[in-house]
Length: 490
Image 1: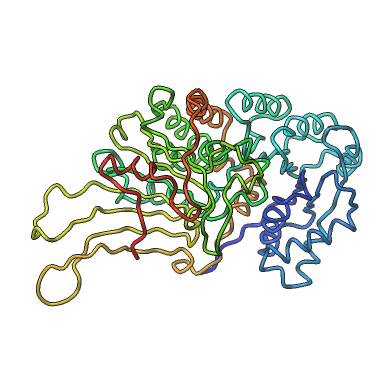
Image 2: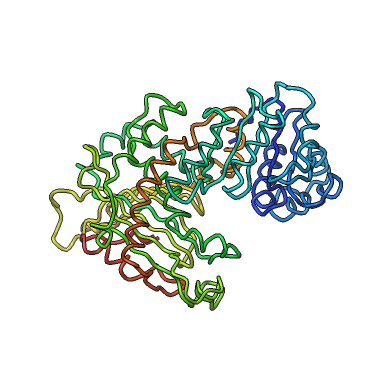
């Protein structure tokens, strides 16, 4: 099967933080792959901007090195050279006027080209960049600004950042990126629900027993200790990635597949989340921190050693039991968990349907529930676990087996990585997979009381050994409801 490539009109993209890890590891490789697939038109420019004292000639080799390291496709010298011909660089200081006149000179007129400004910087710089773009006349009707999470540390700081962005950009020009929403399987979740007659009639508490969302990482903080010490798993993962996935599972069918229709329905879910606060946090939350243990590569240090702070109380693991208080989901719990130094890297959604009301088979035949497993990473795909009879003469020997669709095998094409799709959506002006201001702030308003409850109670994280599935209390969170976390059986 051949993927259909639709060219985009010429555009300019400026990457602030252009010498940082995100730019080298994700953004430039993503742009290169889209270029390699023939999606760019002549006249497109990619401009790195950072404080580093490069010029264009010395910056290009760093991009070349990043492509060699992070883009397996960067093997053809001619293709790499053609891509690098589009690359430019400006040395500037976000906090002062230094270098901004040089950047402005790159745009001598109000071209009709789309101008995308990607802020691969800390959120404390978002407002300053936006203000400088306005001061130097760089914002045109076709301009878009792309900001990475985290957008703030709580509802108050998120509102301040959004105010600063909104002071110079219209809401329709602001693209708040969550790369999880660009994953092929996340979008296929919407196709699965809303383009097929099989699931949506059963997509409610009458038929679904519970939903699990797991985003597990096998690595530790990997050099991000300074950031993580100010964040923790609740802010770093739950407020954005996990809540966005929950919204896509729980939302009502939008009126259409337009940006605001989809985002309106996600916002309704966030507003319907049952509060978790000082009155109930003990029953609905687990907070953990990894200690020295073992990984697939051998012995590893604990989080305090990784960040050089023996007294740290930052959580590296969170498990939550969440309820959505509306007619569709009343009585169906959503179990969320995320953590570092877990046994494996996996992100998946598990929808467990209720058991059949009565088994007609012998008492020794165990009927397991139907489960829909949506795997985001690795090996993106969808499995539907069903009870089926084993082939063979005599007896009803039953097995729980999956109908398995691995995307790579099913479609036999390369699936673009999340940043590839999201960057092209920005250029096209399609905001469907990006967060709107009210979504971000609603998520923070739900998260903040959990953090406040932990702080008021001086709740220390429970320890778990690296290489395990978190504290024992995370298992208990589910098992006291008579359930268990999903584990792949084949």
